[in-house]
Image (cartoon, rainbow, N blue to C red):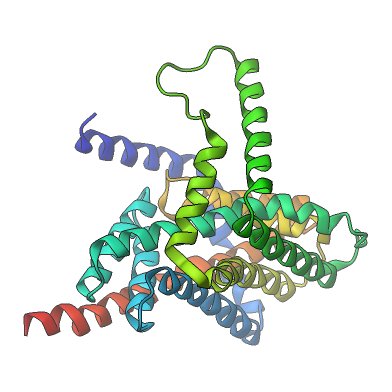
Length: 337
């Protein structure tokens, strides 16, 4: 399949997806006038938390790069983050843009590619672990009807567990191999239930060895600062989760605390679906529905989702465009002059 055909197919799937998700998007956007009912003061902590989340991601990339200056990494990360949210399958496009910006800023091409790969692997791994590690925090005895305070406590417990588990898996090999073997066995069993495997190389072959190799690649990239890298990766999701909690508080929602973190994790996984830019439509539909399952009323779930997406999805777009202009003036323009 040629690249042109692949792009056409992806655009077609994006159009179909947006068409099917249009009712949910219209419902969410139709609540925009109700944003005026939210006191403006609520948006201050939301903006601060989201800025911290983006800064954590840039700091993680700086650690992986070993870059002496933070600003070029931050500008490239903000621009790539915005670009990835406006094109279908934007993750790869955003990574390519950031790679080119880092090279323009003077980073070696090979080092930039390795650093971005390692940073993405670490943040993706923490995201995948989040819903699993949320379960122990839920089972610690937090009351079901504790409201947002209990939801924040569960989230804090889950992120502490996430950091501890990440440290263990980065520092030792046996637990990582055991987890990979359990996942491999479960996937093989599921495949047997589905019938005959597809022809070609077996993607499950040597899964534990490949997981350990990826872990070693991340460690080799970040070096002795792996603890700071892990902290930045956890902080990237923890602060963004705080944006959602603040949005729920702003609309006066009292959800079941045991499900809010799982709703957040599910929404972030939906954002990875490459059929629409930044998971547009999938996140709105999924998060609204998951918040409803967590006990948030339909109107509040819709409004909280809109407020959260306004801060975490839409506002970073002009910020990223501004960052791209700043980068161009400082590096591309300076090189041309």
